[in-house]
Image (cartoon, rainbow, N blue to C red; front, top):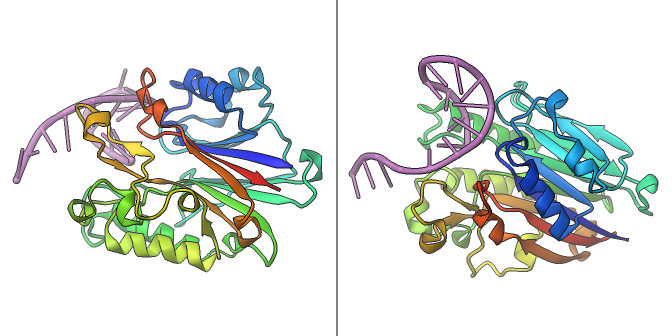
Length: 271
DNA sequence: ATGGTCGGCAACCGA
């Protein structure tokens, strides 16, 4: 069975529910993972997605900040959330697809929203950057993020780190900018390697080519300046590494009316 | 070198 999974930092799911619907209609993924929903669970806009056939929703939201959601055409066998750094921030939700979803082998899908880390890349003076580094360390140590031998698992989300030289518009100019500093890039890669994960996006775009999923709101003309970063990621366990057969970055979503500053990333996986 | 823009929520904080 072919499983199509998308991830998108939506920056308020209530304000942009119509953009989510537009994306679902055009790409028709089986599952969409959202970050920065900024929406308490009891205020989540279920209806517009239900109408399009996305009847299953897993939520971990809060008022005002953060928040993650998974909306799906396929039913879940299980829903889990994990808290990090001893905080109640809503930054993770995971679901398992199994027999009820039509999968012969179960597959677990993690949806993450890693802390952005503030402006100053010094953990001693900037508690937000210290939090980001601690969060990445906890991801590296988490037993739940180390799929067993042969297990099928997917980890997506806004990881707020652009680890490779060509994940940013200018490696040199970004070295002291939070999201591309060496310490956080190393910690992200360490978390990925500790779990044995594969970077699914870079399977389709070589490391020597630019690949972005985010463009700042502050640019006069985001498309002309094209000062992007790859902050959004798709990782798969070794059992799925050779089964990802398509990857799409929906770049045009950055030009839609009242856009998010992130665009959706979609992969198709033969399960 | 600096400041530039969003969204939530009602002052600024977080990004």
